[in-house]
Image 1: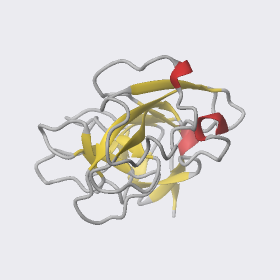
Image 2: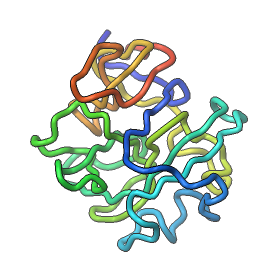
Image 3: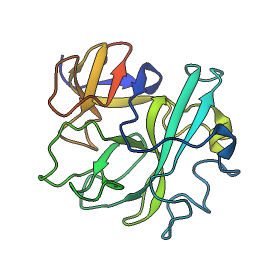
Image 4: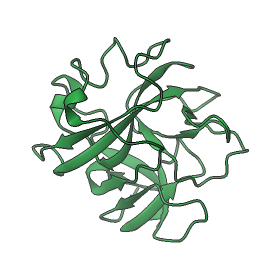
Length: 195
């Protein structure tokens, strides 16, 4: 298979970021995309904070999802939008992420997350980093989930483990179930669809 797509509800992400999530009752009152704390110049939550939520299965699969609060670094193209994969921007600054990584980051990487929206350079916000796709509207203040729908794949993703693609931001996930020296980013419960 070549380049294709896969629905996010067919993915399970491995939370490879340090630390433990806080309990489900700490969901922001205006949802994870609230203007008071997402895509903001000053961090409202401690960077690296993780919140775990339970997706009821009304939309998508039932189960837990984890979101993490990170700083976004826009180094160049591609434009940052929802459902792109981000990785640490440097080998020494873990909680600043980019969708266009420097060449000094060895990819594919196991420390990765999905963007939830367009982000401004050097701003803070939430990213999906673990578990099933957070699709319940309760997480998004009654709106549809920004990670609902298909994501791009590279190199033909089969059912099984996958990694973050070398072309982060443009191609979301890559090569499953082959071994990688840098670890797996998640698990696909089905193969992608060729486009």
